[in-house]
View 1 (spheres, rainbow, N blue to C red):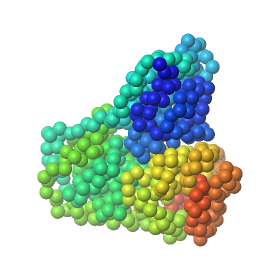
View 2: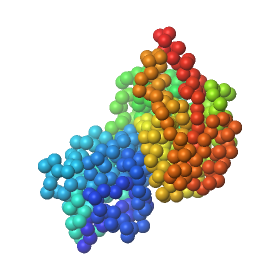
View 3: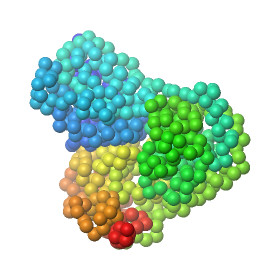
View 4: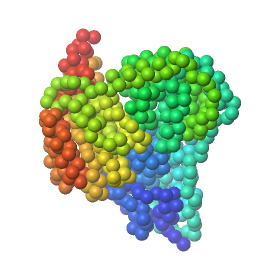
Length: 552
């Protein structure tokens, strides 16, 4: 006989969970007690939002569900930001929430929340484990559900008395994601569409990728000389140095890539949705008729035809689709290679850092130095803000498993993601980019990094404002600054106060030695980069944006 808490931990062990992230609460003390005797590591976070983002980032990098433990009420609502990331980013996530005792339900008891109503619009499944003997069944279903089809978050509430109740139950076997594959007739139709295309374009993204399927993707593109673009913050899916790489279909898209998408007569969308960001606010394709042949391959049947009507819809994982087309016999058109070559040349020109921006810190030089200095397996993380453009546009990603960034655009994501990445890959460099506003959303998780010995390297790009919002503000209401200014601390001193390493960079030539000292320290480190507020984007100054807004 085991308690519900012991059965929870035993079930997590059976699923191969090695690490959980959370903030303790009295509502799930029985689970914490069972973890005391488990090989599963409990990463103690400072805020439930950070814990959920860490679990989501680990899932992004491993493909297996991340696990987050939070307490009832405020703990669960704090975790909502990470749950939203998992939902929009198609990431498998398990959130275990402490709950009031079963006999108190419906009385508005202390910290009582109806989790079905709270998370019903975000999670794939929300349920409550109402008896200890059902723990193995519910945990097994949670893992299957989180990974199936379009992956996403699952929320399970754990009533306090269920966790102390005893039962004779055995953990279910490890769950594996169910594969879906194309039919022979779909492959034949795909071959027909490809053979008649004059200007095909392959756009890849989504979450159900592996190293093997990424390698198969490269082989498939090479066989047909197809230009390959990636969707927003999915850049690690294709080697940027490869001559077929065309760039990312994201925010601040290269105009030449946008034209390439618009001009294509066959758009092969593999693994992702052509949602608001890649579609450039739903302008690149018609709705519902896209105005061209679209082949949409996605593991979630509900995504096929949701917005754009495809000429061919295929419910399949990227790996299964690429395996099915590996023997496809279609002679490449003579014009495909030249089109791919031109697309890659346009990417290289677009991704060359600018020579000069306002101020004493030249971020173009910083990015060029990082590209030369860091190994291809270095992991980059970031949250949201104009500063992220320096990564997305100028970092040359070469390998799978080297990027963790929120497709949903959540601020505060970079630091928690970096902690998770460093714990997963302690031998790699893990570099977090964060704006001054973005960092302060979850900056206390630097304490988690220190406590866990996760030697992350954090670049806080400080321009004293919420830069993205200020950019939009100056465009729409030029010169009327309201609610976007920030008075910031000494971020290097903040790092040292936690027992980490701190550096301040005010000139370009200070960056390289500061970075090397931070790296050599072996400690979690913050490099406080003071950027001129005028350097709002790599190509436009704050004054230029204000002037453009005033002239409208």
